[in-house]
Length: 235
Image (cartoon, rainbow, N blue to C red; front, side):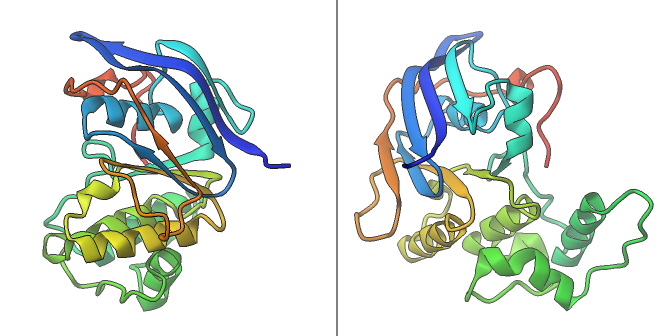
């Protein structure tokens, strides 16, 4: 029997300008890469944030691995690739970001030294797979588009939560790199349930598990201050 990861019934969101998305029904099974197909918009971003517990739906019912409260969903989900939520300052080096993440993950009383090559491999290896890792001394602003997004995924996925929500594959413009990104998300789907979005349907041979056309996504600009008042927006 296939276990359900996400079940949504008539979830909807609205903001100061009116409806943002919905009503939307979703059934996403556990595991694999699951793609939501819909135009890039504030509505699409808000929907992904809702599935990851970073925003509450105004109406409808949402169940993520048996949890229905956004605070509980938040603990089960990692979210990356959303500007304003996990954006990285470009004028920093990879070593600084990896070191910061290692310290973030460590107990408060642990002294964590500056990241070394083996730390880079430990943090980024699972996400990059066979692709070359960025150099520790490279500046983020100098990384290729694909490497920059994979680095963000790696930093936001160090604890391997059951659900990983990735902003959208549209962030990578080059067709070859977009295919490589999909390949890496499929690989991560062997250990987690991965959900992402795309403006266009993906071909059937790239390894996704489900692909769902999502209606009722509005173009309203999404403000990060519309997040749940708890302020849970970071890694």
